[in-house]
Image 1 (cartoon, helix red, strand yellow):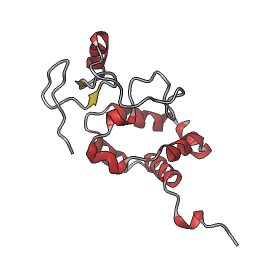
Image 2 (image 1 turned 135 degrees about the vertical axis):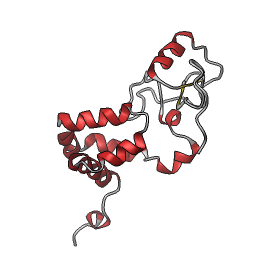
Image 3 (image 1 turned 90 degrees about the vertical axis):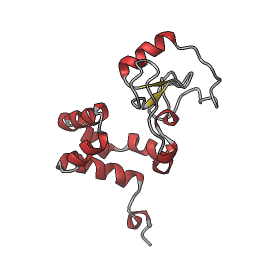
Length: 150
């Protein structure tokens, strides 16, 4: 996996985890993203056109794409778009997401600097484990459930 680059806005060494989808400039946080957006001038053309409707769960004018947050080392962890759409269609998952405690846990993980250690901690929480298991069942159903009865 590639080491994070220095932030192009504030200069923090090795902190840039994100990049601008318009010009590929590296930045480290929401405030730096906002500051960059004010003066962004695209230096290159997008690699490919996005569909007019955007990608699943992503508005057409969304400021980022999956490619912006995955590094080459993360490519093996990429979930196909068709399977991600199944998450949005799951009534069971929607029911779990109605729980305010689970939503708060997910927001905390999303905003955390050290997501990995926080995920390890939250995997001790039964509600979070139930959420993770539900997502995994949707993305990778157990083999026996895929076999049609004779």
